[in-house]
Length: 299
Image (cartoon, rainbow, N blue to C red; front, side, top):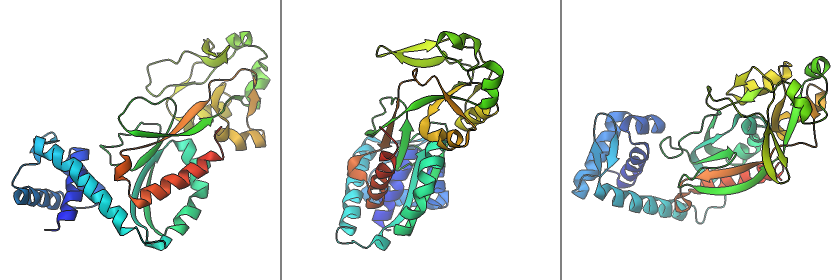
């Protein structure tokens, strides 16, 4: 039995709480993963995992072994790369998640440079409006836009994105150009909600260092940033969006900035990852590269 490999399998099973999910993320048969974990338990002389039909949980001994195993593997990874300065020596898989707009507008255009520099890295890039579970879904790091909830993960602030108000020329020709906040009562907002069924409070604006919400009209609520942008382009209402996400539309005249004196609070951008001591060299390199990419677009 390859104990190092078995430890890696054990950590993935423990974090995902499932043999099936762990096997899928590693591209291995479920039976092979299960047999290697059982062999590891037999060699250690203790049960590391409680197995039920619904989930897998760490035993008390498993919790202790999990923490020590992470440290051991982290130290081995750092030791392997200690004297390697050739970028082609960096290899392995990265699993990363970020919002669609960040991926499309900021990261993807610059990604060829990173992957050409480190040809041994294989990247799995997830992009959606859903908040992924970093640990359970096996992500190395994720980019989050907005206020963070306390998750027990490490968070690195990257800056803030300026928010602007936009409408299409077609919309403005039909309903006019709002000049004041009172004018918004006669305008439509495209509403955005992560979970449909909860109507957002309205147009957000910072006045006297406090956030206020102005009620507007608008009959459309969406839960996708792509749909949010498309609805605005179609003339269905006003949106409030990071400037970086609509640069091309503004430049081409497909969208127009309105009410520049009334803006929402800038949105914080953060890089989230599980544990500082468990970072492989490839994860560290990607995170440093990503930080440099984001610095050009955040305040």
